[in-house]
Image 1 (spheres, one colour):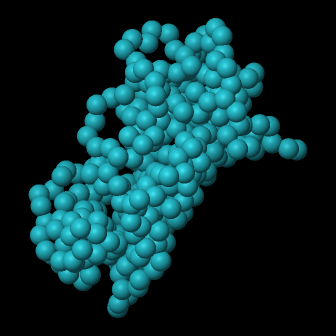
Image 2: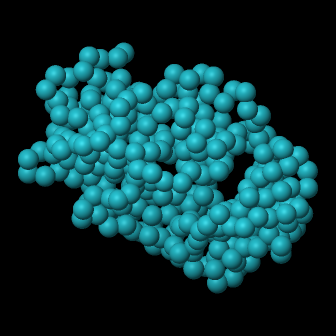
Image 3: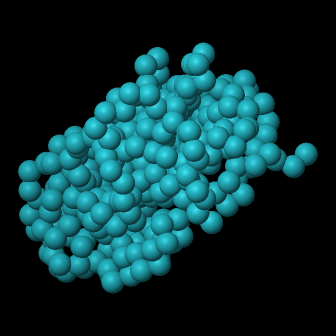
Length: 341
């Protein structure tokens, strides 16, 4: 149900131009809470694989049941990992879409911010971070992205580990695709992915591919004005586990629910503590999922180093969680409410 705008409420400033920011903006608007969107200029990713689960989640939040219905689905994932002698074909369901197309489909209908002097709350969904934050980094791996021409018009994805990294290839179904090379992985020396590629263009640049989290994730000042980090400004996941889009939506839902709960009179400190603890638990779950991949991907120094970093991250999460109380709230749909005793 769409609520009437709250009179006398200072706006929420949302700094970001991605899925998490747009999700926050949409849900705050639905709750009648005024917001202003500060969209930084940044390059767009040429292609994103969005899982069926993420599409359904976005469609439910934004009321877009037709979202990407016309696009063909990637239905298989071919994996050659670790010491396996042959590749395995697994069922999959996703679409490949440009980031620009994805964001155009959910961009909120609101005037952008030119000068916000006094927001009551700020949601950081992109860099730069709030003053006083530090980023905890668990790994050193870097990924390189390439546009590629394939040997066929296949629509699908391929994943392969190499002695010093791993490769991820997506075919668009039109003979074109894109390749992600993590670590020192080289498609020319691969057993599976190299056979799919006819030509590789110049790299589109490097970016971090290791998990990282901001500490702290939220805060308030003495005047009662607060902030929280969301989306890529809060967490960054290893692309090996996929579906960062769904994670971004869930973070946007929780961030909007936290702001709404505080506007409705909930204790801000307790709600922000819940927000931090939920994000840390999610981050720890991601790291735990990564362990299996890096434990079996290879036996070389690169794999051992990155695995050690992941395990260090799990320990960090456990130590942080030991300082938080048990969860006092739960999400009921898109509303945060006290947990039942």
